[in-house]
Every structure is written in C-alpha cells, then in structure tokens.
Image (tube, rainbow, N blue to C red; front, side):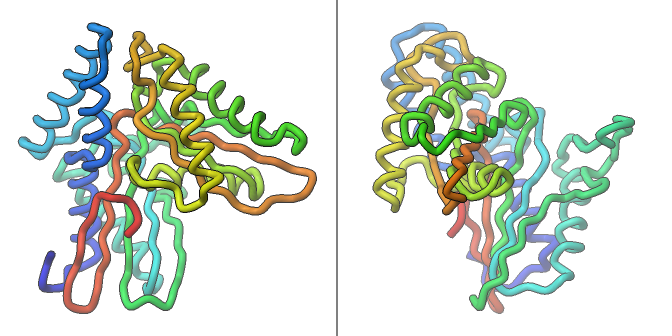
Amino acid sequence: MIKLPEPVEDVVFNLLRASNTILPKDVGWALEAAAAWESNPTAYSQLGAIMDNVRKSELLSRPMCQDTGIPIFYVRGRFDSSVAEDIKKGLIRATKEIPLRPNTVDPISREPYENNLGEGMPIIHFTPTDDNFTEITVMPKGAGSENMTKLVMLNPSEGREGIVKAVTDAVLDAEGKPCPPGVIGIGIGGTADKSILLAKEALLMPTGDENPDPVLNELEEEIFIKLNSSGLGPMGLGGATTVLGVRAKKAACHTASLPVAVNIGCWATRRASARIYDHEVKYSQEGFF
C-alpha cells in the first residue's frame, strides 16, 4: 500500500511493469496444479519451462513474453478527461524503460509506431461512477491469443448446447496457436460488439473464483471439463491441461439473437489494477477490485 498519491502516469507505468513481469497468483497456482497432475512427459516439460520462465521474469523484472501485447485499459470511478493523456504518457515511458516491444502498426501500410500508440491507441474503456477513487486496470493482450478470437451469432434455438459447442470448437480449432494452457473468456448476449467486450472482460476474473451467476458457473465447469478432456494439452502438444480456467459474462440480448464471443488468454494471462484515492494508491493483480 502506498501512503502518498502518485501521478496517473506513474501508476500506469507501474501497472504495465507488474502485468508484464509478474504473473497473477491465480494463474500461477493453476499452472502449478496442472503440473502436479500431468502424466504426459512432453506436457510436463512444457509446463516446467513456462514456470521457470515466470520465476525468472519476476526475479529479473523483465517481460515474461517477447510479445508484450497491446495494453487494454479499463478506467472506472472518478476521473476527468486528463486521465487519457496521462495513460498515454505512462505507456510511452513504459515502452522505453521496461522495455515493452513496440507492437502497434498502421493496419494498411504496416508502418510501425515506436511508442505503442498510433491512431485509436491506447484502447481505453471508461466507466464513470460516484466512487471516491479512480480505478485503472490494464490487460496486455498478445497477438497469438487475440488472433484466435471468435464471434458466433447463434440461432436462439441452439441455446445452451450451442453455446458449449461454439466455445469448445473455437478453442480446439485454435490448436496450439494461442499458447495453451490459458484462460478462456466467454461473452454471451448483448450485441455482436458487446459480446466481444464481455469475453475480454471475463479474462479479468480470477480463475479460482466461483462465478456469482450459478448458471454461468455451471457452464464454465462443463466447458472446463470438456476442454481438458480433449487431449490438446500445453502448446497443443498433448496432455491433460488445455485450459487453466473458463470465465463467462453475459448481457441481455434481442429475442431473435444469441451472440457468443470467445477471447482466449494464453498461459501468460496478464493483468494488474490500481485504485487511486486521495491519500493512497492500492495495487492488485487479481483483476477488477
């Protein structure tokens, strides 16, 4: 706990360093558990290499993956328009000092930006509330897992069975491309764009927590068992663990629609949050506070 308030730029820098160099505890515990029950020698060696990498990353304070991703920011609580500029400053500084790989390019010319900015960057989702704090959460998202995002517009008659099939097909069709085992984020309902936002937000939910919605909790458990019974395994090379967790969020949707989105987090499902109060800043890597 920090006793004095920090500039937003410094908070953002600290969040980017933490999220890229320290794996959230719940994800780390899930990896340890996976190694404990893994009997496939290849899968066990892959999990061992991942955990060794995680330990070295934290010890040396260096990014755990060469793809430091595109940071997705969520800002909630009390704030004004200056927070966007402060987030940019923190990202520019982090790119240079941590360092983070400059990943952003023009989508058509492919000309690179050197500071992880560019048109439309950084991505920031704002939710104003009457709380007495400013909460900033960052999720660095690498391309390997992001490229495996799927949106399916189901016929409502396909119902729960259709949702389970859409999610399991999306994950298994991705094979080893998103660097499994990871966390599966599912967004159900809303509109096409809303379901994709929900799927990404679901990745911010700690893997070991029970979903507060009992229907979604049961759905998560069923999909978790199905995927880990598939044999796809770490890096798609076979084994008992294909996913470390399955997380789902939902929103009401049109009576004639059933959007289902899948957003995959790789083994390095990274996140960090901070709440800035008048007299202190509190940090967490457990997703939203």
